[in-house]
Length: 450
Image (cartoon, rainbow, N blue to C red):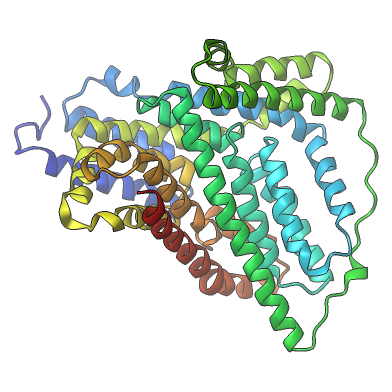
């Protein structure tokens, strides 16, 4: 029997879990210890010694489906990173876009979408593209914040694609909450479109603003000085990888789309249910290795084990919160008249933004907030897709925060002597613009789709 099991219930338990989540994020931020490891510690202590769960029951909370999904998808697309396929694709896009001047910010945005959408993942895109974007924009005298922001949000948009890493994780979380495969695909698609439109408007809007500001100062971009050499042709390994990526996108996307459009056709439903993106990723990864497209040891080494531990550990703690009734209490509070119904999605976006400003949306915020949505939707009679979308755009909008991974990486890639200036711009321009845009978008979406 747990130490506090006889207390009046869930309030104390919920408070302890809230403190545990905040402590996991705070300690990780200060010490750089993986958030997931800290979450596992709190899940064990609270689950066993407070809630009276058996240790085996806590261990069973390890989210095997999500863990396998990330492992499988990153394994396959690490082939494309290891043999230089994604790098070559991005180089070709940049080469063909040389001389665009202020339009380069949009080019970096689109390039990041393509790279992440092809499976590179947020971090790989940031490491490869952000330094190049900052250097090129410095050459042509374009605001460096535009370059950094374009790469960050582009990488997020691409990762949100239904067949890319974030999109597959979203679908796994939705299915775990009881939504069907087709419904999960539809919600993930809504997230992709909403964030694509929002970020495109922000990038284009800031580009026009800074261009007008430069013109008013009499400054012009040095378009002819962008140094981008023509990339070499794709080699055999890269051509094989491109074909396999095409096969993956075809098999992963087409069945789900046909099932959504023609739900009454049993063939499409069977096809969609049998084509599992994670398992398909493993199959294609093995095919790539057998064809010599990449070294298996190097590919496995590129799997983001830190992210896997972070997401899985936080998932365990969130499941302890579910067992304690914390998720239901939060949903009941938001839907219990404390917040006007039309502002609930905005508040949800704000909560997601605050959490993600100091942590990872995929690893921390989404696993924490998504379980709230079904109950919150039932209480408020709001569309659950709307709530998922608002939570996601609110959380992802904080990637430009200098305290988050994306903003910190852009600062780190900035030339010496300009890092403090980038910090101030992220804090005073990027963060308010992205956060404010997400909240306004959430309100508009609520008024239109509630």
